[in-house]
Structures are given as C-alpha cells and as structure tokens.
Amino acid sequence: MLIEALFYVFGALLIAAALGVITARNPVYSALALVMCFISSAAIWLLLEAEFLAVVLVLVYVGAVMVLFLFVVMMLDVNLAELRQGFTRFAWLGWLTALAVIVEIVGVVWARGGLGIDAGRGATPTAPTYSNTLELGRVLYTRYAYPFELAAMLLLVAIVAAIALTMRRRAGLKQQDIRAQVAVRRADRLRIVKMDAEKRP
Amino acid sequence: MLETLATTWLSLPDYARSTAWILVITVVLIVCVALLTLWERKVIGWMQLRRGPNRVRLFGLLPGVGQPFADVIKLLVKEVIIPTNSSKFLFRLAPIVALVPAFAAWAVIPLSPTVVVSKADAGLLYLLSLTSMGVYGVIVAGWAANSKYAFLGAMRSAAQMLAYEIAMGFALVGVLMATGSMNLGTIVRTQEGGLLSWNWFWLFPLLMVYFISGVAETNRAPFDVAEGESEIVAGFHVEYSGIAFALFFLAEYANMILISTLTAVFFFGGWEGPLQGYAWLGLGDTFLGQPSFLWLFLKVFCLVFLFLWFRATFPRYRYDQIMRLGWKALIPVTLVWIGVEMLLAVYRIGPWSRAWYH
Image 1: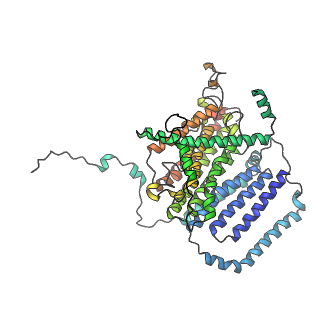
Image 2: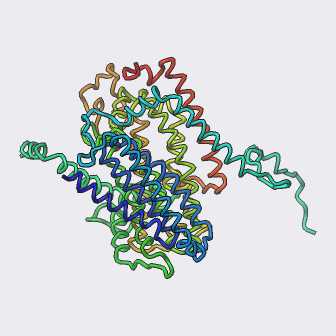
Image 3: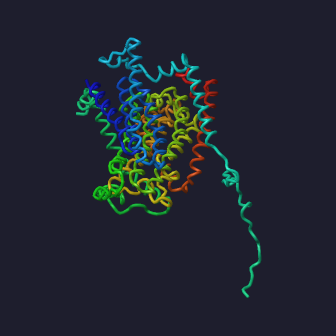
C-alpha cells in the first residue's frame, strides 16, 4: 500500500520533471529538471528493490554527467530566441521519435509474451539476506566478464579519443613548468653580496 | 523506570525507532555544527596568538560559549535579500539543496555497534552519490544569484568537485577491496582487532588521498577557491544574507563532520577501540578494550581538528595547482595503490589474511 502510494508520487514527479525538461524556457532549468527525472527514476528503482542500479544512476548521472552538463549549459551563451524558433518547426521530429520509442518498447514486451512482467503485481519480494550489489557483481565478473571488460575498453578508447581530438599545442605557448618551480633552491634565485659598510659622504 | 523505558523502546515499530533516531541525529548534528564554529574560531585564535570569541557567555559558563547561538539569532532576524534579475526559485532552493545531502548521508553511518538508521548493503555507494550531489547547491546558488563573482565561484567549485570525486571514489575502491563489503557496519567490523588492524595501516596512501579529497570536496581551506575572498569576494554565496547564508554555513560544517566521520569509519575502524585484540594488556572488559560510540567521537574530533589546523596553517592553493594535484597526483596514487593491494591480496598479507577473504 505504502509502496504503491510512493510509486505514484515518484511517477508523477518523474512525468512532471520530464515535461519540465522539454517545456522550460531556460536550458539551465531544463538541465535541473532532468536531474529531478534521474532522482525520481532512481526512487522508482529503489521501490523495485534494485538498489544498486538506483544508487549508480544517481552517482553517475546526477553526480557526474549532469554536473558537467550544467557546467557547459551555464558557460555557453545560448541564444534563447533562436532555440525557441526551432521548437515548432522540429516538433514533428520529436513526436516521431517518441512514437518510435513507444512502438519499440511495447513491441518487444508484447512480442516476447510480456517478458513475465505482471504490471499489477509489482516487484517480486526478495529475502532480507539478498544483496542486489553482490548478485550483480557475481554475474558481471563471471558470466559476463568478457562483455564487461570489452565495455571498459570501449570507454577507455573513447576517453583517449576525446582527449586526442581536443588537445592542441600551439607553438610558442608559454607555460609554467611546475616541477622546475618546485625544485628551485635558494641558490638559484638569490645571491648574497658581502660588502663593506660605506660612509655617508 | 529505565527498564520500562528500554522495553517500550524495543517494542516500538521499526519506522518509529528510525524516525526517532533521525530526529536525534539531526538535532545533535546541528548543535555540533554550532559548537564547531566556536571551536574553530577559538582554535584558530589560539594558533594565531589571539583569544578568539570571548564575550558572549551562556549561563555564566566559559566566555565565548554563547557566540554561535548569538550568531544564529542575529542571522535569523536579518533580512534575506534576493537580488533583482536573479532566478528567484533557484535562489531560494540552493541552500536547501546544499544542506540535504550533508544530513541524508548520516542514514547509513554506523554510530555504535548497535545504532545505525539503515543497514543498507550499498551504503558506500549511497554515500558516494550523496557527497557528489552536494555540488548542486553551490552551482545552483552561483548561477541563480546573477552575479559574476558568484558564478565564477560556482564554476570553480564544479570543476574542483568533479576532479576530487574521482580520487575519492578510487580511494573507496581500495577500502572496498580491503574489507570486502559496501555495508558500513561490515566495513567497521572487518577492521576489528586494535590499532594496527585498522585500514589506515595498509591503505595509508589511500587515507591521505581520501582526506585531502575530502577537504577539497567540502571547499575548505586550502582548497576554498570557490569562496576565495581575495579574488571573488565570497564566491558562490556572495549574494546570500541572513539565514539563507547560515544554511550554506551549516552545510559546510556538517560536511566537515561528515567527511571526518567517514574517514574514521573507513580508515580508523569507526567505533572499534584501539586496544581491542591485544589480550596481553588485560583490558578485555573495561571501557578501553570495548567498542563504543566514544571511540568514534574521539576519532571524529581529532579529524575535524585537522580541518581547522589546515585552515590556520596553509595558504590557499592556486586554482591550476588544485586541478593539477587532483588529476595528476591523487588519482595516479590511488591507481598505483590499488595495484599494490592486488599483490597483497594474492599473497594474503594484512587485511587479506583474514577469514572473510578465503
């Protein structure tokens, strides 16, 4: 009963936030609404006893990706009027994409005989000793070890590519060599001159 | 009398007991923050050969004890100015966003062998995700205020947090490897057995990385470029006044206590006593040989003191040096040490000679 009520609360929040993402006039508000989306979906996953996924969703998307996203959105000088011009012009494309996604999801669920999903029942309760994190780790490191490591390699390649694409060295760029700065000794900079005191003329 | 109280307490339903603990922890934490601000000013005063606050007395106690309470009352009755052309809703929301993670994190922290609000199995991940959410308060505040200085502070803070979070996460991976659990209670329990069996001994570089990143995450000196009053006035909270400013202050100090507690839990054995496991000392049943909340309190007190000591001692880092330290020094250290841990685990040395690692 309580869980159902919570589900509807978070579901409503999720829908409201998702609408906020596309209707907010300011891109910063959109990004923050997207954060709210992630948090409410994490809460729904928690209700489904998938605590590992829920926490990782918040950790990765809210904690890292969206911070970067906000960082960029705030830094960029987005021309709001220009953005709004496109809204009606490209709306049909948005509707089409949404429709395609819905058809795909429904199609998969329907074609595979509902995938054993019983919408009216909610999550199957697990034993109190059951640890979602432990089970996921066990599967990831045994049965799916190769796909898991392949995904990791893919990410590494992406990181290297991103850095290689954006890094550029201009010729004649003046930079501080911090190692040299730290290694400086007194003798390199300071010369103490011994001289006799002189009489004032 | 006490017995009836105890039985009534135990007969209460789980949610009632949890709610009671949440209330107790929150109130105690707020009082701790108030006293910590006083303690900070006193300690820094002594280090700089001053007296620190010494005017406001409380019930005729030591001079200065009433200072934080006087400050709170002052801030409460001041006007909260909302700048024109600011984003009104986000401007009001930001202090709350900063404050919530600092308090919510206490849900999974084991305070004593029996007291913990939630024995979550993914406790460590939960903590990581909450500490990473703290940055939103800063970013939103900086942006909503419609002020260049505030915005600069927010941008600095965002970049800094991202850099140090990675180092922090990697340090926690090391802890995870040494204890074999993400449940904070289990992490503490696996460290049982006295001073040298705590994680700090085998994970010393990770302890250093974690604590330094913790100082950076809380935007404390010497990493407080988000405030940087010599460059950008007061950084992200420059436009805040009255109680809205006080909430940021509260969040910062609550985060300090939180990071200290986490360091104590992950690296110094939480509520375990330092002399446990040394049977030849003959302390078995006495307070010194038993785990208790007081040990945790003592450890947290010492670690919080370090924060104050840093602030009184170190000059502020230059911004590019902060980034350099985070990306090029701390992250490689953690990676190397995780490699060392793999070797230790293979040869069953240190924490890996214990029973859980068969």
